Length: 590
Image (cartoon, rainbow, N blue to C red):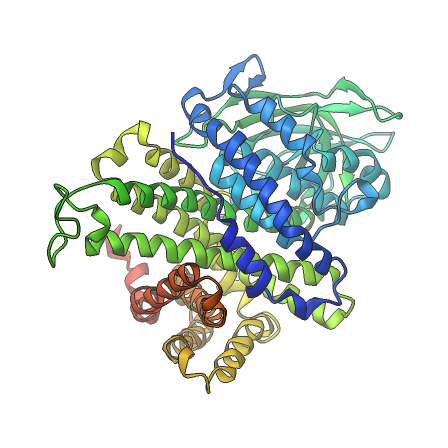
């Protein structure tokens, strides 16, 4: 069974130093959260390591059972979910008004990563519920909030989003599910949805579906979509569960990975639902859930990548094969461990640079989200939210691309054994692949970045990144120890700024120029963003080195690897972006 050890020291470094939480002491709850972090992280790690990780391979091998609309999760999953609820983990970030603990998101982010590292299939159900709660909090009326939120926040009920239909994937304007108004103010929902993660399962006593559908007077396209809350079991006036609603699971998709997470085909046969938000305004409400989900899906990539890296590193340290190029490292043994070989070290450093850089990005984005919701100053809230809006498509794509690449690299470290199921590397690879597709493919995220985020209010979102990076570089100008990080960061930031100007200018001439370079631009942006994060981590590591030389020397070595071997990738991406749409849109190819 693959092992997993939560990276508690790195989480603590980020919370204690990298996030600089002391600068935000005026934000309610931050100081208390920082003090609570060590105990919370320790307990989270125990649950994930001791309960969830042993079930990961079980779920992969055993899969799900489906019988006449009923879904049974693999052995141990229901019991693990009960422990998850009893531990209070679903309640962390939600308002106390509805039974939550009102803790900041930057404390929830480590828990999310640990769950995804130890058992991604398990984590999908509570992860989707988190997004559903967020949508209901922001868009539903008070009656709906009081009826559903307490049990959803407690984890007794789960929540799912129901968008995709056979003819309507990314293009939601094509969806056909109907909502007929009833005399009592409810609606009858009729239609078919596919790819509904956790649409049916046996872990919670009720499943709350957020369904996109069209009212009879709906205009065509995305402007005619409304959002409805549709519970599996009706909720009586006293809060108890009543009759089964008129929808069912027609089957499960047979997938490449996440075998213990039910991906359902759902049929709504006049199911009773209630409108959430205004008529024909369902898509903006659903995007609240989707934006939260995109951040969480990014962390899924990070979580799987971290677990894959840990197991590859452990294997590499123990696997004897060949000799070091400069002579035997362990002459008393028949062979050296493969960690002596430059190419293996390249792979290990690449995985470490990704996971620790991605973790810093996830934690910083969580902090910015907290500030956007909690800070007393409106201008500060707006600035933080702008950063989150800009970074969301980049984070989702970079972390899911990187998670899959890391799982693939980990398999390569195992050699032939990586292709053998019992070593576990293949499960990480299979599980990671879906994250690049759902919640908007990474190509769609790239189009969101270049099509909506770059030009927003003449670059307002962009300024929330470029200005702080410029300020950081300027502040460290007189620090010679930082020059090896700030000089290349400045150079590659310039490449990114030039690419941004090219995309903006040429995209106005021909939108295909922006479309053809969008994915490369997004990758280029992520490289520079990671460079900024690694430079900030290096700054703290230099200051703290004497307190823990082993940890901080490793941090600095990884930062140096990133700047020397990974960040230079911006130059080739710049060349590809500025090649324009011609090679992509040539008619002769297909």
